[in-house]
Amino acid sequence: MQKILIDKFRKKLKEGKLTIGGWIQICDPSIAEIMSNSNYDWITFDMEHGSYSIKELINSVRAVELNKKLKLARLPNKNLEICSQVLDAGCDGIIVPNIKNKKELLKIRNNIYFPPAGHRGVGFSRTNMYGKNFKQVMKIKIKPILVAMIENIEGMKNLDDILSVQGLDAILVGPYDLSSSLKITGKFKHPLFKKAIKQIIDKTKKNKITLGIHVLQTSIKEVKAQSRKGFKFIPYGTDALLLNKSISNSFKI
Image (tube, rainbow, N blue to C red):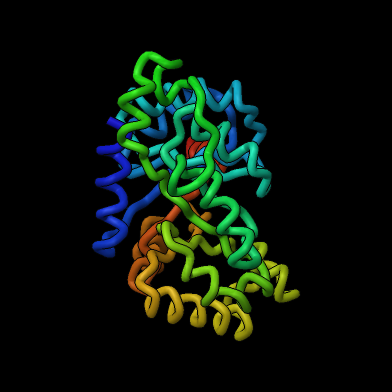
């Protein structure tokens, strides 16, 4: 089942089809179950700005599995150990924050692939039903989804090299961190930010790598607008933002 989900998702990315993801920071399985039982194509558990531990992650992964949606984890950092832990918990791929150069991404890539393609640790975990399906899983050797976040000037400068990494499925722009790195925090209409975005669009298109950007506004019109610009991997809103908006709207006459 996991391989089928990953293969279908990767095919959509390669075909340039728009995929929209839910972004979860509140570490409660009920939130994960509700959001995955919706129009989202995939779900991301935010371990960088959310409060997820591996134990809490596992229960939310189980909740999303009920709705047969692809599961990604935005890592809290570039620690290699956490890569194996989130994949062993049952995630189908990872989103790596703040990638600055090719060397960083290669280390991550090698740590999420089983030998001989990489050096991910081999052991009993949820992904092989704690050893029961070990032989089958090792025979298939699933290659998880790999998304690198570009969030700073250094990553921008090294983007061509980053895009050359085999196994990279998508680039995700972190608009707030990128604008902060350019010393124009949150000023997305600023010429410097627009120039940076255009460079990223042009380079990912040239290298045939899917490009994404987080649309925080709860507006599907904005999602479609970004899609027309070339962004096809789009996290849309967050659980907390959607909850806040729903509560505010419920008091409007």
